[in-house]
Length: 160
Image 1: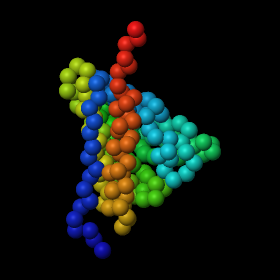
Image 2 (image 1 turned 180 degrees about the vertical axis):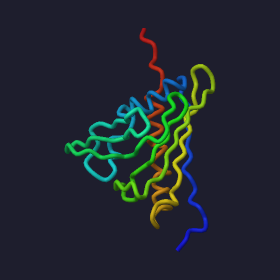
Image 3 (image 1 turned 120 degrees about the horizontal axis):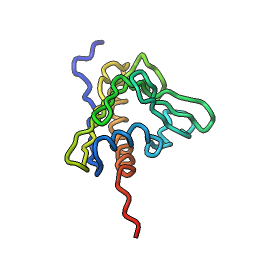
């Protein structure tokens, strides 16, 4: 059966008090500081999460049990501006590049020390009959992850 109504993208945003370059760095290079360890994609909890900083690079994690899981591959890498991933976690949070959706994260300057981080997770139509259910799960999960990211991007209070 062909789906006649496309599945809506998950769109979320958060404002952080840092410039675009730093926000990008925290989102990508420092992902292990904010990505929830419990968001382990259906296996043992994550021990460490990493993103390789180039087109074709992996977003992957090492689990506490020593196994490794690929979450996504980088399809666009524009530091300080945007990063796009082929999200390879399918329904049930199982690795399946044949059912990949797409995740784009944009960094929009609101001033010298303020950035709006816009997340769009899309193309759930590529996923099996569970695309709508999976989209709804991610719609509930991304706010949790973005809140953690925003907390890590907060400037540290000055020491007195």
